[in-house]
Length: 291
Image 1 (cartoon, rainbow, N blue to C red):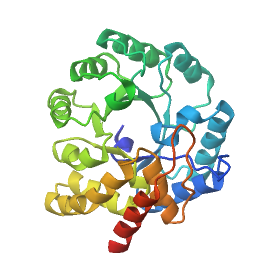
Image 2 (image 1 turned 60 degrees about the vertical axis):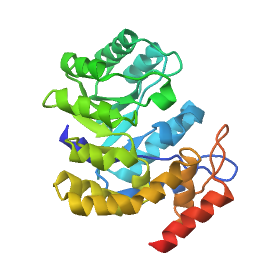
Image 3 (image 1 turned 90 degrees about the vertical axis):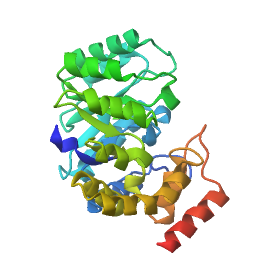
């Protein structure tokens, strides 16, 4: 699954001011990311505000993303949740022919045990026609997919090929990297820890800021993968203030504010999220002027 090495981007779903889908904005985001050199795109992940999209809207997002990407980069589809049976049904009934992999978040809200998480992924693995990347993000799910469970999944199910690790814990990341099977991919789900993960042996990142600063962020990751760490960390330290800013009022409000200032798409988000504050917009504008 080397097509998922490097910089992946978890795409936003742009909305118009009336909060209807802005498919033109989605097209511009995709073009900007591809032109900036990102390696692959993730459709309908957390950053896409997947939880507030209807099934019909999800299909529109999928259709437009496939159309605009036109095979230029691999596509990964977010298919996850806390209803295992629903995920299985989705995997069996949705047309996945244009996708190269599935990103499936660990079950949220239910707070299953490690045995429950393992059984969930076993069922997803058996149902999926595509390779699966698990996704651990305890701050959102309420439970931590522990390294020993991840490693067991990687060893037991050949179509679970990797983990997007977003616990924000570098020690946990190192435990994964230390003991993972040779062909199992570990990628960062945290923009701030993306370069440290790569420099420790990880294969890349699924990024939020990568769609707002694709050229700069992708260059940094590529430098890290090549072992050009002095250059990479120089770029990392330059991007750190902006990474802090885009997450300071939640995701995707911050990245949409950045994209709006670049004229790529609207900053609107759907409730219960709210758009970035005037203060945050001013700080982002100041950073961009400083470039």
